[in-house]
Length: 178
Image (spheres, rainbow, N blue to C red):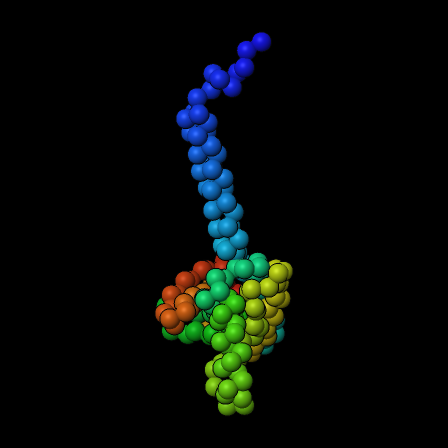
């Protein structure tokens, strides 16, 4: 009976060990990245005219850790005509990462009742341990220009240094009539 360990060179073992460590490192990096790249989705449930009112019903889903700690997202539903001569901005949903949420609370405490920013429809702390689901329902008086209007979702990304990037998504949009 031969000792097989004498046939294996120590440099071969070091090479295998290095390959295993690199593989583990790549898997760990991919896993950490998945934790910080959350998901955010907006689903149109209803956008219709009934009588003299316009009814909008959206479902906004925010996965935990959807926003990096130093960033925030504002989700702004917008109804507009194709030529953009008429535009209606609806109340926004504010989604804050951990640090942005802390800054928001501090601003509220320091400014008190003199708070001048537009208040959000909903405020989400995306640093939580659970996903958040928002049923965004709003009714506004119907205006004639809304007949040919489409719904667009504006997503405003704000970074820690207050730089903003705007993304627009068309949400399959004309107004339905009932």
